[in-house]
Amino acid sequence: MSYHQDGLLDMVIGLYALSFGLGIFADKILEFGFAAIMPAIMISIVLPIWIYAKRKITMPRIGFVKFGARGSNKLFAIFLGLAVAGLGVAMAFGVFMATGQNGTPFWLEILFQYLFQYGMIWIGLGAAVIGSLFAYTMGLKRLHGYGFLTLALFVSGHFLSIPFEYLLLTIGSVIIASGAALLVQFIRRYPLPKGASANAIQ
Amino acid sequence: MPSSDADIQNVDRLIHEPSRLTIMMHLYVVESADFQFLQNQTGMTPGNLSSHLRKLEDAGYVEVTKEFLDRMPHTALKLTRKGREAFKEYRRNVKRFIEKLPE
Image (tube, rainbow over all chains, first blue to last red; front, side, top):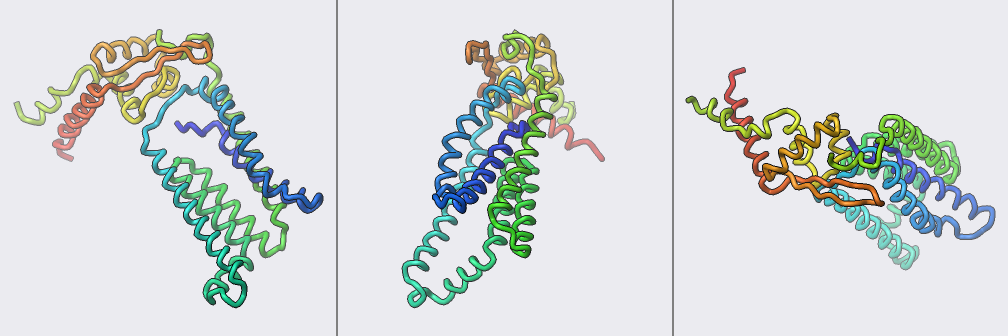
């Protein structure tokens, strides 16, 4: 049994992708930095709702379990690794931007040329790798699927010149729909136990 | 008595009973769980689960904490150090016995 079989995590991931896509879409129409502030807005709105839904939907149905520190340590290591990798890329990009064409080392210039040219493919690959890491750590095989769906869509998007925001909107919608289907399945499979003392020892 | 027989004779009979073994196995892999979770995992009726839990609690293997969450009664369960050690010992004995059996 997994604590994430309720589909709520999927809906959060999907909402995140969808809102980011909508943010970029809004940027183009209203010329305001929605894409930049959208992640912060999403965290402040969606996270409390997610926690509330876990307490009201998941916990009364399957009960509450505290797993040991081993799983959390693995997740923390992944987050730390991703943060360090992200910081490394951001610093390299900073050097690239600050030094300009003349001062930038040749290899860095080539690297960023490739990054920009095949940006969509890199993002897709990143999503597949991150999806697989979390799938392995959390034991959620469907995250592999989301990662590879992102990869397939972004590679297609690169070759068919589909705008980035349309891809995000598609991925977000698919993941939300999958999460909603899982939630319905979960609620049917685990109906609310009758009586106030269902979670109390007799 | 051959040593392999001794291994199986030494198993903790309180844990060896299938329902209690299932409870111990589930509590062994987590830090703590509640009554609802165990009931879903084991498929036991509330009365049956309560009765086995009481036996494990009396033996000092399971710690039962009763509390109220959102004004609802809530029972948190965890293996005590004694329970964890007893389960490890049970596992060693059964493993030794099984491993000595010819193919």
